Structure formats: structure tokens, C-alpha cells
Length: 303
Image 1 (spheres, rainbow, N blue to C red):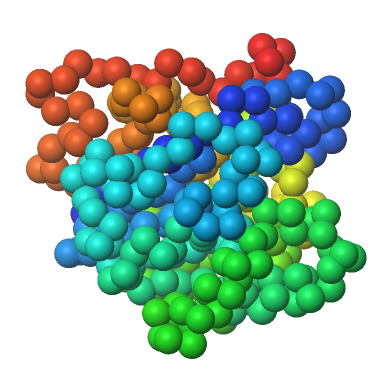
Image 2: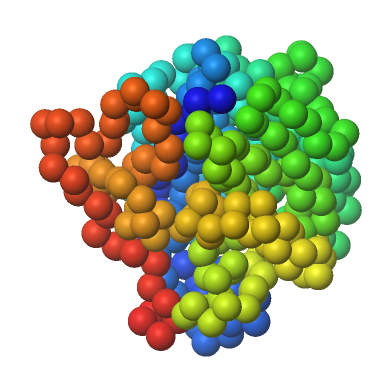
């Protein structure tokens, strides 16, 4: 099935603590951290994996607390690839955290997909406050209420496991890792290569490649699930793609240097990961020179 695939940066954090990105990294150093979502086009559909957050809502408190800058709303971000929020017909939410699900209100014509376990466990964890507050620090109660309302209205489909969404596009579970009911997406392109859209199973290529390219998996530092399962999930994703460059990691700035990309005047970038046969580039049309992102993800030694 011919698909095209882009990663769209919608905001960024200039100085994310490395302890969030890598389990056991306690140096206090920081590095740049992207906030992005993924646009997929093919089979007559316009799809997103995750939607980012919405500063018009209580998401703004999380945005400010995390020192996020250069925020742009979905209409501005999607316009860079020639799409409007109302054009989106399908959204897969990897999990319920504010920076992945909070902007769902922007997409009036989309059908959403989320694991039932994610929604139910999110509500349950909120009901146990303050017991689990430290591991649900990215969960906005207003987003959970919104998702429950969407499910009641039939706009949110609650899944009970994996789903072949359409040919070449799979939803797989990521339970008991970053969150209790997460999921991720596997896309098979026209050349038969697989791409994994990881959600927050990874924050950096180095979670899979090892810090500084050491080769050893390292789990993310922030999350509420099992570290053992998190490492198994990283291995599952690496085995699925074969080449770590085909891991689509939405918080990884190095995506914009490993793949064709363009950085715009608002400071945010778009990476063009897959183009269907005959599809013209949307980041490097003939009138534009190639402009890769200026900043890559530093190794620990460089940070």
C-alpha cells in the first residue's frame, strides 16, 4: 500500500533533563527535546498518530511547567504539508498524556482509536490521587473527561488489543510500559519496509542504539509501567524495523537531520520520512533548497 509519512514538530523544549530521556541518567544535564506528531496519507485517507496539546485548555499549565517554547496550533502545523485539521479522518492516539491527546478538539471529522485499557487505567489512576501523582504527571484530567465523552459519542473507538487498521497499517499494544494501556503503529511502505511510530516507548534513537552509540538498550526515564516490559518493547520495535532510522520517535530532534527536513521561520521542523511513488516532496519542492534542521540530538558527551 503506498503511503506517505511526515513527522511534524509543533513545539519544543530547549533543555529537557536527561533523566527523563534515559533511565538512570542522573547527571542533571539537558538536551533539546521535540514535541511532534505524525501525519500519514494513503489509501484515500488522511491520518494522524497523536495530535499534540492545546494551549487553549488546561494543557497550558503542563506546557508552561515543562518550559515548552515555539508552540504552534494544528492548523498552522498541518498547513506546512497542505492539510487542514478538518481534513483529518483518522487519529490513532498512542496514549492519553496531554502532549499526545490534548488537541483532539481540533479534529471535528476524525474517528479516534485508543486502547480501552488506557482510558480506564487513566481514570482509575486519577481517582487514586495523591498515590500515583508522580507517575501520571503528564495526564490532564480534562483530557480524560474529553476522551470519555468522545467514546460516549462514538467518535473514539476503544480497542481491546491489536488491530489491522487497513492494509499496511497496524496498531499494536504497548501495555505496562510508559503507560498502562499504550499502543504504537507499524506502517509498511511501498517498498515493503516497515516503520514504527513509537509513541513514548522511546524519546531518542539512543534508547535503541545505546547512549553515545554504545549498542545497549536503555529505557526512558519517565513513565509508570514496568522497566522490564519497556526494554522488551524497545527490542520488539527494533526487531520489527531492522533499521533504527525507521523508528519514528516524536520527541527526537535528530529525526530532522537523519531524514529530509525543512525548518520553518517559526523555529519548528517537518521531516519527510516516506513518499509514495509519484508523490512530490512537500518539504523540498523544486523551488526550495534542502534545509535540514540546525540542531541534532546531542550525545551525553556533547550535552
